[in-house]
Structures are given as structure tokens and as C-alpha cells.
Length: 546
Image 1 (cartoon, one colour):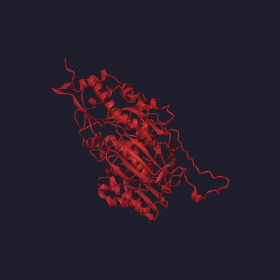
Image 2 (cartoon, one colour):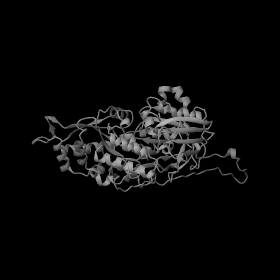
Image 3 (cartoon, one colour):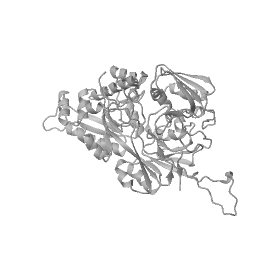
Image 4 (cartoon, rainbow, N blue to C red):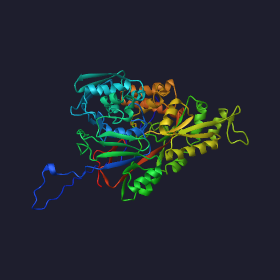
């Protein structure tokens, strides 16, 4: 092992606003006080419209890793265990009690007895087993990669389920606390809709799926039966709004205009628009550091010339991160140095010393050494008469496009001809799984555990089986990411995670660029909006004061 310093920062979060106001009608002195049945909670009613820049490819929790899907699943489902929004500690939710073995191979969950699915069937050991057993079925490899070496689900009694893992799995508790990916899927709705379940999802959460108009919106309606909210909410019953409309507006300018006119109530705010809203009394601005690396370049290790370490290193040295941050993020981002963010437990700060700084001269030397030379009078390097041409895949988020254009210019300065390939999100993911790209832009925000390293770099997750879109297959890297997920001792696990991060940087597996600060603008008519330690939006105390 090498010496290193570990940064074990708890995930940072913005201030949590939990506001609940009950307004009751006032009676004249001659009028009797209303009975409880006559009291009206004025927090109830209305439709809260939330603007998103990205439409989900599916709403099947077991079939995608898309962050856009989280925005829907977090509303229709609940996790088995919750996380304290201030400390991140595990707390009861759908499971009232739990017990995990010292070797990390067995987790026993004692479930509440009052929870029902949207279809009306109860959540119990049998239906939870049926829900999670689906992860083992073909087509759900991304879910299995997230959950780990699942062995057997054993029913001990009506409301007690035991998870048996084939190997120790350090992130197991973290996995069952994911509201989106680990939520129980409704077995009856899975049976009813079959292959169309991804367009007709169901779970046990405060909102029910209503309808999906492709390219426009998804509508969710209040689950009137909901009576098992997490303990940190004041509202322990059904949600206050009648409905949520999740409206998809890809263009930042159009989405911001809709916010200004009141067409939408809440949206993530592009960093370039923050100054415009920060002093506006009609809006409240929340901010928090993104829980992942917002922007990095994937190198496809199975396509020439990206299979050459020297080429990957050269492209990494040619990236001027501060210049990109100024243009694409209006200066509101931090340079990324490795595959994990500083806010994540398991981050190794040694990446800051070994990452690639901007050095165009060194980049040129590496390409020369790899045989890609720049002949006099030419603007593009060649080798054996072939030009150095690569593709850069992305989707049309505004800051992604700006980042791509900056990369294109910086790599052209090195003598690399870059063709930008712009597709809608689902198509991009399909093409990356197929390995069509030389390079691609990618970001993530849905992880708070170093097991992310396994999911994006292990050989078993390549070739479309998971989200190893680098298509790297390396025995040493596999060994390191396996060790970090199967080692139960936290200190040893940190050692393996650090070694894996060193490998990723030194081998230029990817090129990290920046970590955004996330901004959320909330209309003044929305009360009770809050954000937890992961940057998740907490909406169950939210109501529309309109």
C-alpha cells in the first residue's frame, strides 16, 4: 500500500426548509367553533409543476441508471431504509428494524405491516421478495450490478425478509436506502403491464403514476392511502398537492422563461442564470455541491486510437479545465481530478497531485511518441497517412454543448480532428453501450459510495451489461474494485478505493473536468421545499400557497 491521506467528508447539503402553515377560518363571537371534521387544511390542493432538462428513457427502476428516472421514481416510491437528512445515518422506514451480519453477507429486514402498493396489494416479505427477485431476471443487469452479489431472498415470516449475499457486500445498507433504485416495484403492476411496465410504474410512495406524454410531461397524482411518511417529515399523511407535473424542457433558456412566467414552480437553474435570480424576491435559490463528477470524458478503450495510453494522456493534458469552467459553467464549478468527488466518502485526495494539468507541449510529445505527427502545413496529425480523427458523443444539454465545443477547440489546437455527435439521451446511452464512440461526455450525481468504481470500471459491467461505457477490461482494476466492495473493514476498504482511483488517473481511463454546484430555483408560492444530505429534493412537506 502507498501512503496517502483520505478525505472522508460527509456529503454536503443546503439548508433544509420545512415549513408548514395551517390556516383555519375565523368565526365571529356568535358562531360556534368548527368541528375537526369541518376544518380545512389550506395546504391541500393544486398542481406543482417541476421543470426538468432531461426526459427519462424508462421508469423501470431495474432497467436504467438514468438520473432523469430518479426524478420520477423518488416521487412514486419509498426506500426500505431512510437516511437522516442532516447526518446521513440509517433510520427506519418501510423496515422498522434491521440486522446485518458482521461478515456483511446477511441483512434481515423487519417490515412495517401497514404499507400497501399502488395496486392495493400489501407490502410484506412475499411481495418484497417478488419485487427484488426481478433484479435477477435477464434485462436487469444494471440493477444487479448496483445491488451486488445477490444470492437468495428468504422469507422468515410474513413481514421478515432476509437477504443472503454470495459474498460480503460492504454497500448493502447503502443500497437498500436508495429511494429510486431499491424501491419495491409493484408486483401486480409488473404482471399487468409486462414489457410496458417502464411506461406504467407502481410502488408504495406518496404519488401514483397517472400519464406520460412523450416529449412533454409526466403527471403524478396524490396517493390518498399514503400514511407512512419518513419520520423527519411533519406531514405523516398523504401529500398536500393534488398532483405533480414533471415537465420536460431541454433548452435552458426556454425552461428559465417558463419559471419566470410561473408556468413551472421549481427547476434546476443553470449556473449562468444564478445572478439573474439570486436577488429576486419571487424566488428562493437553493444550492449544494453535486454528489458526483458532473462532467468527464469517457475514453473507449476498445477503439483505436483510444486503446493507446499515450493518446489518452495527450488528450487529458490538452484539456484546459479553468477555461471550460468559465465558459460552460459561468465559473461556478470546481475542477475534477478523479472519478469520485470530494464530497463522497472514499474520495482519495491524492488524485489532486497526480491528475493532468494543462500542458499542451507534453501532450504533443506523447502523440509524437505514439506516431501521430503534425507535418508542416497541416492542422491535423497523421500516422501512416491516416488523419487523427475522433468522435465526441453527447446530448443537447446547454453546458454539455459548450463543454464539447471547448474540447473540440482545445484538441484541435493539439492537431486532433474532433467530430461532435449530438443525440437525444436514450440514443446516446444505446450508442455508448454498443461502443460506437471514441470519446463521450458523461456526468453522474446518483451515487454516494465508492462502489461506483465497480459499476463504471469492472469488466463485467462493459459491453452493455452495465455502465462501464469506457469498455475497459483490466484484471488489476477489476481486482481493486472487487476488493473495495467485498472488504467490510472501512479502513481497508478505503485503501482499495484509493488504489483504484490512482489506477484510473494514471491510466487515463477517463478525463474528469469539473464538478458543478447545483442550483434550484423555487417559486415563492411553494412552501416546505427542502434538500437532504445527498442533494435529493424532499417534497412531502411541500405545499402550494397560491
